[in-house]
Length: 315
Ligand SMILES: [Zn+2]
Image (cartoon, rainbow, N blue to C red):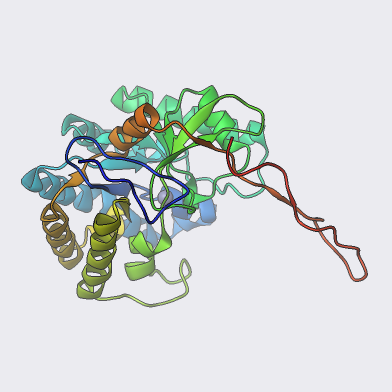
């Protein structure tokens, strides 16, 4: 019998058939794009470039073997620049039956950009995925999970079914693309605790923490999270980067995690596109995000208006 995700009361969802929860393994194939977008001069750093190219060159083939061995389908978010740089790798991902989704063109910084600029990134990414792999993606994940208020409408303009960049839920939901706009897209929320960058990511001058955790620790915390999602009937979404999680012991731990998640009775392990389509087909409520309105730079003595919620939580 279907079970409602009771822990996420704002986004109730039921799962198909006898499934009681959902899980998706996602891979952001950033490769060099994220470092170049952060600092174009990083292309001069041969070692840094090799750290990033490890993803498509070494890690993706290893990860595809694991996914094939475990007989599950995953979602790969691929910047257009990665697709153009490694067309054979991207085509192999598609040939293996995995979902290819949009992740910007050059993993561009999203904060503060206007709609026209953001639209150009979306369109250039779409063109790259179409020309390299013949794919028209239905899913989008903003670089650095940095969605703008204007983004949902831009995605709807281009026929996207879902986004996976927000952090305000344990389960997928439908969201209005803008206040007063009748269109909606599905949101499948993510969580920094389920991102491998926080566990393993380290490169001098690129990340500052210097902490490289043991795969045993990552396996433990991700297992606990998957078990909790399973028990409360919500949606476990893991975000991995091949250049990070495709390293040997991490890949072994990832396969162990997949085995554990497969062992959870009634866990629906599938692509985000499948989860999004199911959400679109079965959920009636459409969530409108509340936007808080405060002065941009309230100086000393400025009179603060109470934060103004521009819309209700649902309509
Ligand atoms: Zn990314």
